[in-house]
Each structure stands twice: as structure tokens, then as C-alpha cells.
Amino acid sequence: MIIPPYLKPGDTIALTATARSITAEQIAPAVHELEAAGYKVLIDEHLFRVHHQFGGTDTERAEFFNTMLLNSEVKALWNVRGGYGTGRMVDGIDFELLRRHPKWLIGFSDYTVIHCHVSSQLEMATLHATMPVFMWNKEGDEFLQVKKAIQSMLDVLSGKNISMDISAGTSYNLQPFEGEIIGGNLSVLLSVMGTPSEPKLDGKILFLEDLDEYYYHIDRMMQTLSRSGKLSKLKALLVGSFIQMHDHTIPFGYSVEDIIKDHCQPYGYPIVFDVNSGHHLENMALPFGVPVKFQNGILTFATS
Image (tube, rainbow, N blue to C red):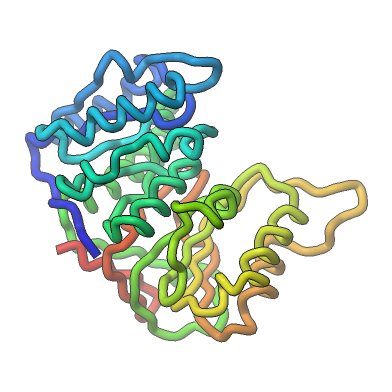
């Protein structure tokens, strides 16, 4: 697995928009956090393009991404927000530029497309982490939660040996494990199956999170992964936040935990719920493709 160079103060982080559009106001608080930490932030005027709900046309978003990959001063690309759209433009990205000059690609949710594609096609590490829009319009405790999430992102980018305590989460078949994490948003993960972006899951630690779905949708997606054999050879399963779930008048009858446990527990590998990553404000960074060990309730990432 290729791990991009870690950053040091003074390095440049570029902002990108692979999905929905953004405004200068919406990124300002997060930009301030990066600059306060000693990083330069590249904000190109093309970042603010608008095409319907997208940050420019599919071609424009891909070309802008390629421009940032080509820029030798840029050491990391931080996506401004998710929503929908990355799958529409991913085939326009010149990933050979990334292969020749590895950089950290950062984001989550719809950005799962990028995580999966880079893992599958380049075998390169990426960073599942919060995005600038989540700090916009936040005050008090909410602001501090996002600030903590951004700091965890910066800790990974600087190469610190970081760890995450996941001992409080409900677990099954728990035992020490090690490997590399891949995954992200469950709905987006399902959308790349059968495409060039489909990740190799055998022998990996799979991380899943989602929001705004019906319980039966979660069951259907897990059923698909199970029936296709994608769940059978994992090292472990980490489950982040599944929030804003929906049900019908006649309840589905199973919680997200029930659904995931039923589909995965028969395989015998460790399953850990309530991992502090996903669609909530304190979205702690998870480096994908970086060696990780789990023991005594602690995930430890070998980032240096």
C-alpha cells in the first residue's frame, strides 16, 4: 500500500468540490482552522462554480480536481462537502497524476467513491474525515466537536501515531485484529460495486456508516453484500454512526445493529459498533490503507 507523504506546517492543502457546490462563507471557519494550525490553504476561484446543485459540470469538477493533483505545491486535497455527484465525475479524474505524485485525498460520505477507487486501482492510502462545510454556522459545543474532528484529521496528516478508543461500543466475536481499513458510506459503497471503483474487501477491515435511510434499505444493502460474498472474508467490521433512520407505519422490526449483526456474525470475525466516525459533528478521522492494530479496546494506526 502506498502512503502519501505526511504534511508539515507550511504545506499547502487545496480545497476541492467533487459533489455539491459551496460558498466562500461556508468554508471560512474551516479555512481559519487550517491556517491557525500553520498550513497554507489553496482556494481556487473554480471551487465556487455552480451547475444545478453541483460544484460545476461533471467535466469541470473533474478538470479542477486534476489541476489540483497536478499542482506540485499541493500536498493534500480536502473535499468541501458531500451530497451527491462524485460518482458522476470520477471517471474524468486522471489518477495517473496521483500515482506519480501521491497526495492525501480527504473527505467522507459521497467521497466514498474516491476512497474505494484509489484503494482498488492504486492501492494508496486516503483519509476518511470531516469536511469544511460541517464547521459552517456552528457555535459553542457544536463548534468544538467539529474542531476536534478537524484536529484528528490534522494529526493523521502530520504522521502522528494516533489511536482511537472503541472499547465503549457494543461488540461481537471480539479478539485482537490488524489490517487495513476500507469502506465508508454504505449506500455509496453499494453504488460502486461492479464498477472500476469496486474495492477489494477480502482480508480488509470494513468500515460502514450511513444516514437518512430506511431500515429495510439497510437490510437490502447488507443482504446484497452478503449474497455476493463481499462480507465472508473480512478481518473485522467497524460500524460508525447510522443516524436519521426511517421506518414505516408497520415497523420493520430490526435495528441497524440487529441487521448488521445478523448478516455478519456467522462469519466469526470481530464486529464493533459505535465507532466515532460518520455523519455526526465529532467525526473522527480514519486513515484508510494505513496499517492498524486493535487490542484491549484501542485502534492504533501506524502512521509513521
